[in-house]
Each structure stands twice: as structure tokens, then as C-alpha cells.
Image 1 (cartoon, rainbow, N blue to C red):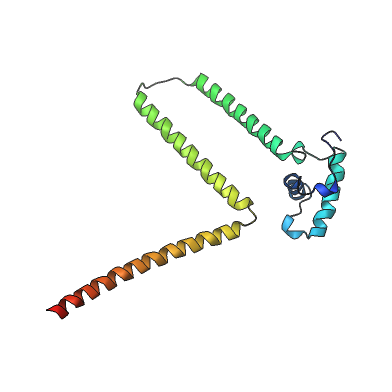
Image 2: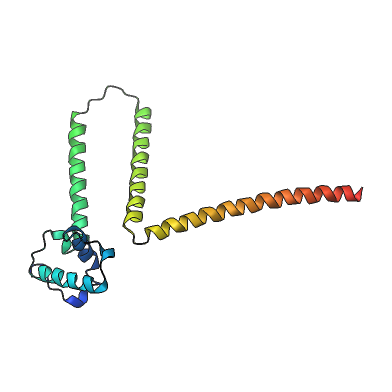
Length: 168
């Protein structure tokens, strides 16, 4: 085929592309399939892969497609910024305030990107519910440790007070 030849025993090597194809093209969620169903769907994927009849280039090599897509988005973003900069006319000359505003925008953009990345990772990961459960357990452990610390402090003050009264 145009993109190479794969065999049915290479399911784990092409797993990302196959699962993307399965959910996006076939509309079948992975969780709804048994191992046998997955193998049957993979044989259909192999046939389409080897005959180069998959509907999009990303189902052949997801990583390469993703890098190309990111480069395209960066080019489009750079073109938009260049055209915006060409039409921008400066009306104030307060460089310090402009720099502070620029830094604030960059911080907000980074924060937004981090949040989106974390949300994407939590949504895509198979164990997102396990991750949320782990976070809940950590929060509960933190609360328990704080409560124990308060109890120890209270107990220490009460026993110190009772020691003074017994000595006198």
C-alpha cells in the first residue's frame, strides 16, 4: 500500500491509529468491544490500511498527522498575528504598562493551555475515574492529617495544663 503494509498481528503497534479510526470512523467506543470484536474490527482496519482507503491520513500515522496539524495551526496563528500587527497603530507610548499587559496575557495563555492539557489528559485517559478517585483519597488523607494535628495540639495543651495543677 501507499502507506506500507501491516499484518493482523501488529494490533498493538498501530493501536493509537486503530482506536482513533474505530471511534471516529466506525463510531464504536473501545469499551463496548470485547477482545474478539476488537480483532474483527482490526482486520477491517488492516484491509483498509493496506489498500490505502482510510478516510484520513491521520489513521495511517497519528503522530505525524498531529505534528503537521500543529505546524499548520502555528502558521495560521503567525499569519493572523502578522496581519494584526500590520494594522495595529500605537496610540500610547507607556512601554512598562504594555509589557505588563503582554506578560499577563502570556501567563493567562499558559495557564489556559495547561488547564486544557490536564482536562484533555483526564478525559482521554482510560483511568480518568481512577485518577479522580486517587485525588479524592489524597484530599481525604490531607484532611485526616490536619484533624489529627489539631487533636494532638489540643491534647498536648490539656495534659500540660493538668500537669501544672498536679505539681502545685
